Length: 343
Ligand code: NAI
Image (cartoon, rainbow, N blue to C red):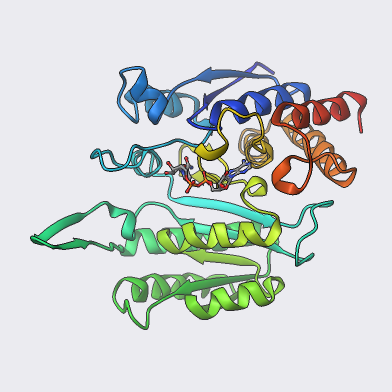
């Protein structure tokens, strides 16, 4: 098989440190990849490019898959978020974020196994805001039948493919009767086509309480854009924090894999960031390529990486955010050593 060319976006803040670590670990796994580097965010602006450069978009269209570090969008300077732009331009409508307990990472709960599926293109992220009159501003929440129905079907298909048992929709249709009302009516409609999978609706405030009381009652969470963003971080907190939750943004043509966390400017350049969430996103990426392109060897590379971090965490090799002492590069080296030793 030929080398698989994949776009890599180092991003900003801790992005370059963690993408460098992840590239080294994926290379050690034996995955035959050629990384095609492109910029986005602050680093693109600093090179005199657009915050979301056209050439980065074109490269993702050409290669279909990208691994992306977190990007900083300057606030208050009129820039639309890099992430929102990327998801909209490529129509990456499904954000998938698996949240699971990891061996060796002790948290309040030990049985968390939730997949968050977030609608990625509309809701309050429509970017439609205006000044109604001086001192009064408005932000528009958009819901379309097409997008609500599409993400609902996607969630149920995912549930069936992965042998999951239940889809729970969090909403606030008691207040946002039209927008959230449409979201739940479309998800309910989709649920009728999947009688093998359970379906549940829950008002989001009660859902948050239940999540922190007993997360094991949830399987797949289906959410509109803003709720998905917030609940992802809440769920990250259940399993050890933002350093351990990966993600994928998937459309019908392209897929962009990235951690849930941001560019963490508070720890950037210190070699202390946890590269694990981006690495786990890389594992999702390898599995996605294996699944969609029949490159079975990528499944094996993904398994090797997964095995290495499970073992490392169990044996206490962790970064500071997980209570360990290893730096970003030391953690990466600890995984590479295990991959090379075959354990
Ligand atoms: P953040 O996720 O960057 O950081 C929140 C807290 O978690 C910080 O204390 C940080 O040090 C810690 N943290 C995050 N990732 C970590 C890691 N891998 N290892 C250890 N600790 C980690 O969120 P924040 O501070 O709200 O956002 C910072 C910037 O990131 C903003 O410009 C924001 O717009 C951007 N952002 C980008 C995202 C993306 O590119 N997908 C997603 C979220 C935020």
